[in-house]
Image (cartoon, rainbow, N blue to C red):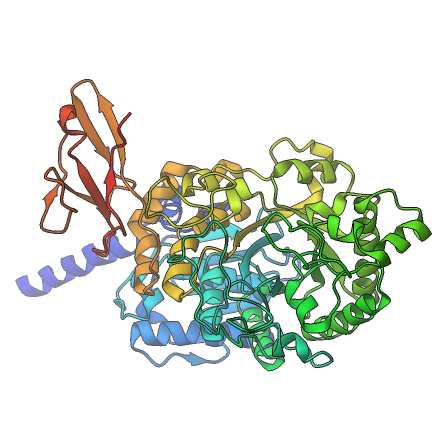
Length: 614
């Protein structure tokens, strides 16, 4: 009898622990401490939570098959259970057209879990939030306990901006197709919805064009004795951007692009193609002989002969051929035409372009730029797409109707364009360019024209800052960019440059300012999100500790609570055998101090830090 009584009491205690009324504070604390980007609202949803082991089947319609199969694969692996797809399952995926397209609602109660989205993309984002509420190892396909309980809650979430993009420069240095697919997975986990592929530049043409095979025959390979020489950026240390010789041929076939687009679409990611003209066109000119008839002076990057001739009608016929194929291949509504850093002196010394200027009564090169952008915009529009270009296309006259800009040289051009009623994507290099160094250190790789772009600086950016209220609707979103002049994008290196700054961009683009808090963001990164990246073997840049000196004491400040700091005072590089920092050090040791930060998975920062001498 005593044993029965004890068992009943145990069951009552267990039921009480697993089935208490979820408070507002409980629900919000559980979600707000884990999810990235931060969600819009969380409410309790009943008394009892849901035990993961109860998931036996997932219910979804044919329109959500991709999302359902994605979730089924992850949960089957992590719960070591054969989860079925059938009607009446206790994990429900559905679409509600009354919601905004990327909005979702995640509901958990004692009987079931449901994700309702305004579109398949919205459902996918709801799935991502659900997965982030589980132990981080789920992202690596590792087993988690079937006894894990989610509290009863209702999450209602939607993005701040419609456009949340990431540019990859695959022209300067190529990114292998398989690596690109893995990169899409990571973008989607962060609710980034546009992969912007910079497919063409002076150093390479990376897309199969069937009407002009010369573009990849000549433009996709460089090296000694080739039309395109071995790439060496004038300012980049050779160890940072060293070519093999020959380099290539590297390009994406149209079949690969179709596979990429299909793969990305199941994860809510659209693919924006960029064909960069009329500048940055050395590879095109070498392939198709479309340059001005005099090279003129070199451009800002030290390259001459890289501007398309605006006075040669063959150029526009060639662009029509290319854009026709690009428009048919990429379903996204937009095609990016480039338009940046055009060396107009090459036009001014070209006989065909000078004849054009006389015929059109153009006063200077900016008018040719405007004319060229107008012609290309017409071609893009003819094939049912909308043009977008870098902010320099604002120069020289009126922008063609319906053309958007990306503001990269700073927020200023975007602010002025929005005031004129032009749609804008903010991509200010000072906040959004991941090829910039994160900090001042001799081993820190990257460019520096936009200053140091730390994760904290990226997080501090508000794309609507200084935008009048009546013009804010024209700011469509934000884009980060990873240019590869200074990088050989082996997977480890471009992950290092992307993460964790992309995590900051994701929250800036998705979450409302009232939900943005850098200290809270770093707590989530340390407690959960770095572990998610670790479980997927993403070699992100480990944030460095900072230094604070107060009087005679020197303090090392952890970038997040879970980080460890190792240090030495004898001039050697710190290792895991070195002293671990636990308390303040005497300030007079500053010149001897070397310290290094480790991740939650025990990985060490690439290089040690020292305190600079004044």
